[in-house]
Image 1 (cartoon, rainbow, N blue to C red):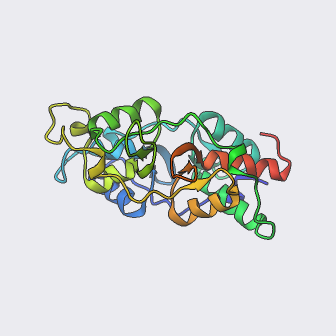
Image 2 (cartoon, helix red, strand yellow):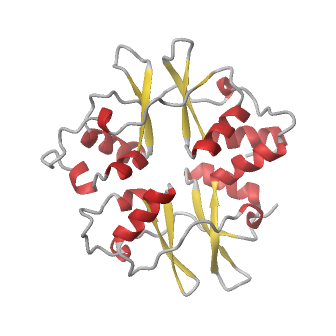
Length: 269
């Protein structure tokens, strides 16, 4: 199978001279994590959701060119699909722009890790089994509490490169009460300037004011097929794993599901 088989063209593109506020609106309204920067069919760069959070106001004159980045990865549509997945997992990049060598390196679309989840759901729809969560989840989990400030949360996101964290009741009570993601910050209208400054106008805003509740959770004995369904249906990238008392014991993300999918197909990653 080639990359082109799971390629999606659902991502709108922006140009270097578009207002960053426009890109931010697209990301917020469509729930996207990246936007390709394309002009005359050529891929020039990408915008990430972190870039969108750099906007300081709805009247900002900042242009896409001011914050666009060079993609860490770019795939050819002719590349082997499973090799591409292996590289995505190695580099921890879940959304990679794709060009076509045969068409003069023109932009073709995005290979998103979500496409592998949808493929897994279709391929294993009869057995509805990809393996148990307990065999693929991470047990060393980063989490936040409702009283943590948004400023501190943002710094943790930058340090860990995690786009979201489960929210537990307290450091002594590990009951999962919500989840907080970059998309939540984007929806609430927070800006990077405020998030990076202890003296910003929202320095005292707490996680509880932006988190999503209740959090969708699974248990260790759940099947990853069910997790894939949850992720695709809700457009989420990670699901907290809880025990019978809803206490946090782990987390499972898209990359875990993809590894299980590859293993079920006999593909070595």
